[in-house]
Image (cartoon, rainbow, N blue to C red; front, side):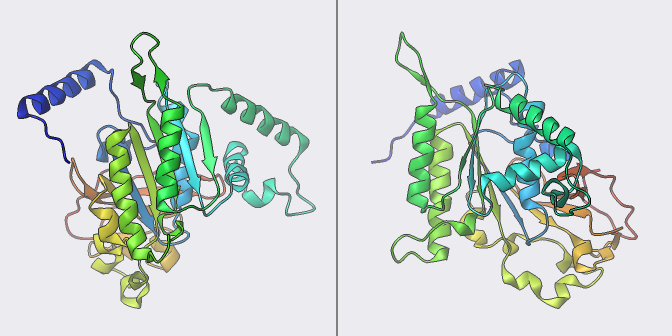
Length: 333
């Protein structure tokens, strides 16, 4: 049977939260990019669901990896756990990509793919030092789940993780749950349970994510593909509204959209040979340009912003907004 609370209690909780934000005792989880933090509440709020959608090769995993990799740098002084559900890429490969960014060399280079240009002993020593320094950061542990699971198994694992890492007050027995970033790469790779269809699975996942984010101080970052309809030729013609990532493009959109607090659609126009983006015909210099479409912002305004993917360094950086050829834009500069 559902429980209820009075308006008085809700007002009290809201005022306590506002005061704690003012005092700095409650803060959001900061990402590496001010433009993304500004689209949220100076970062991603706890008890929230962030969905990042895009075609293959647009850099979704790269974005997620950088958020995790730089979590300590941008959130110093705060205890944060990270749990990654990595269904698409095993942990070893993810860390090799991370190493690539550390020494600023390509993934192929660190794997010594060229017999005449292999990674050096000095660079391996640098990576060992880096790995040791990261794993010694006690207030930022990162754990990985590599085995695909059902939504129910996922929910059970999250609950166990949160309870196991809770800190209990020895005097009162009260539990304090640690703020936790949980990433999912990606939503469509959950195993179906019984006769559950993929669509049903996504709806069940949305319900599970909402229940978990209400119960625990979690920020979920869920990666999603786009529907196949985005591949029609007219979506890739220069200067068309169809160049943009829309709400209906997220795979199983309704299933995740209604539960999400922030939805970011990532596009890489140059990979589709789009030279002038959208009806404003924004010039795209090359395939390194990424466009982040903030297509659902629960506590802010929708917009889009420009970034550059440095795939050789396995990182994404903000870039100045290209000068549009025509029209007015809702762009965060």
